[in-house]
Length: 94
Image (cartoon, rainbow, N blue to C red):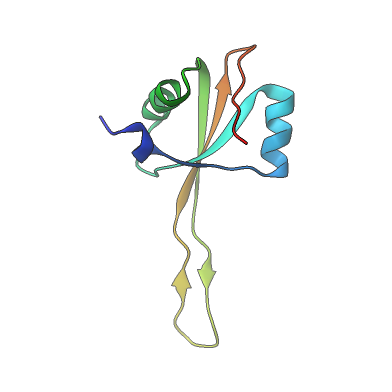
């Protein structure tokens, strides 16, 4: 099994994720694209010692970037995980 620090890359702190946290006790993480929901759940539970109820994931394709030439580069692909914690549990991320 992969290490938790290899699975969870960073926390996504945006306006939308803050609203999700306040309303539904959901937290948004950027994770390794090769990780599945069970690995993400185990990583969150081992890193933060909190009970995870569910994990939803979404894959995002990197944007094409072109600068005045015919060829283009691409930003990296990434995966987002929305983790729902057990009622009454919170994470102090900031």
